[in-house]
Image (cartoon, rainbow over all chains, first blue to last red; front, top):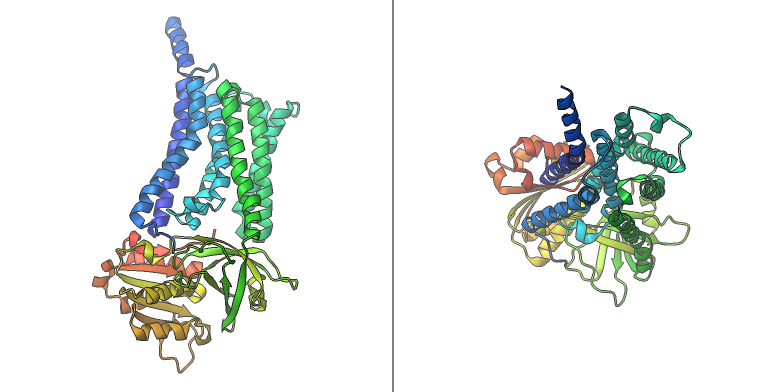
Length: 46
Length: 449
């Protein structure tokens, strides 16, 4: 495999990882309050 | 000649462009998250919305990647930019396909996908996904369904334009993140910026090219099915900058009912001949079969030059091996001519494969340069279908032939340039990799997408 193809594969892989990580992290960040509230309810019930 | 962007500089600038690209793709998501840090929606719902934001941002940037912008392709080569364009488009397709499923999964009801009685903006979203799917199918399966390149390109342009319009209206009307005041400005501004690039690329550039047409000054028959078309730059036009080994897009205006579609061809002349650009073209398709009918005085539009397949971009390489298959000789001819004119003292071994002896292009000129020894050129012709009296190599260029002319202990010091039909190029790159040649010392232009 020549260098430019290797860099291309590496770059696309990096873009996928960064994009998926950002998508999940942002969704997790936004739902943290909801999650915290549900945990409180859960602990009160138990 | 254009200022070459050497490999080290290209890596730095390429990394910077990549950083900018990732930042641009993630900006809508990061902005939306920062401006609306809390959401009453579930994790999967938010993830689904985020998929759409990133997916649309990727598709929005793709026309820029496909616009053949010279400053953008210089560190990578246009073939790699187009491959990246295609790869990230597939990422966007997956993300956009996940969008309605994640929203529905979070809500536990699937009416978003199944219900006919939905508002118009949801139907617009469904239409966007259909256009995305149509684009993915026509692009992904093009080689298998034997869709003509020109028909595919026209279809692709229409589908992309349609899907970006649909995606914009659907997201603007539906997306909760896009109701934020800042996003109300950022989102249309991003679409407007991309539309500007698109219009520049499609319309303004073509109009500009029409005022700067080149003139065909010579058409030379090189072999039974190969011609060289030499063009002269328009009077008063600035010098055409290209590096030896680069390629250009060319559209010929010949009248006489001859086709005038745009094709890319390697520039086979040397940039040392100012105001002249020649392309050597083999008759292989509908358009190229008419190349012999081109006449001096015909006009041409040129766009270029592109690519990183040039020895001048790697000044540290002293010992070069050029491996050519058939018409793949053209970039090497440009480089050999440039070396001759610049009195380069590099060592070059040219392994040149053809089927028959009469298929060998530029044979007299190559042999002439080899006799002059400036550059220090050794030529090996190999024929896969040689006649009885042939004294050169027989068969294809393979591991055995490469090792015959490149001693294993010398391989590490050599740089290999490969330009051949796709299958041969892939095989040779594989052989070189097996022989332990470092990937940075193998150069191969891949223009089959």
